[in-house]
Length: 334
Image (cartoon, rainbow, N blue to C red; front, side, top):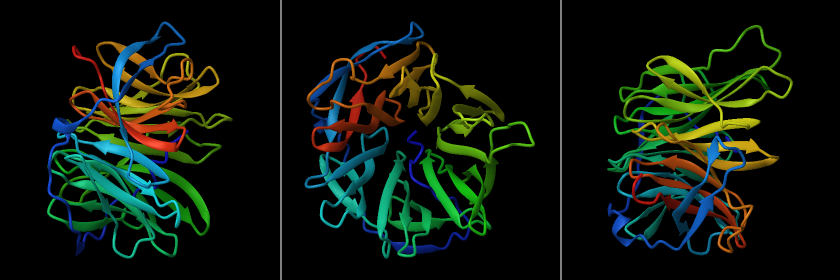
């Protein structure tokens, strides 16, 4: 399962560390070129087919790998790319048809994971020592490292238009990981734990990933059951109540993104294969993938990580050139 929106970082000592130069903001919706379409195929009546979603390939020129992770309602896209020579990871923002690389000063790798409509970005970076941190990079270039209080390993995954941020931290004692926990940090820097309620005592460690948050404060992610397989399930946290999210007939499910209409995207395992999915509260689940009828642009599976309010997804797909990002737009009527 690709619950690696990267080991994100939560917040703590919020000193503003540096000013990072940001590109001018231009909506790319007016220059979006729709290159190809695929169908979302169903293997069960409850997981239906969505036809003619339009896809735009996101590829940093010269990159070995491009991963699209987040997008806002202006069509700005953030993600990461890998240099083919150094294999170093860099962040990028795609706005107005232009890619701009963003690297955190002193980091050996940088990844951008989400962006809100104001242009505030969250992501993660790694120090030369190997420690990973989350960060908030505001639209005016102010950078804040985010560390969950008292913890060494923090990751940041999502941000909404109220600057509420969600992510995870690893509870570590010595070299032993005692648990993975989600959190929400508000715009004032106050943290709230996000842990899916599970029975105790447990045979396995607690695992909850908080992956995204919409403007209503709804949080989505994934958690591990305490069975022999530590099965991953998706969840929705709304108004203090947790709801399990499972794609019908799936073995594993995780939710990566949610928009203000409550529509979700994520990943599930079914029929022995991993697939991306789209969920509409009004219409149900749709499977994303083209393994049945491969397209030359993306012969492998497609995995959406984020969804905006215009029914556009941002994610990754396997191409003949390797992993590349995409933005998909649902047909009119959605």
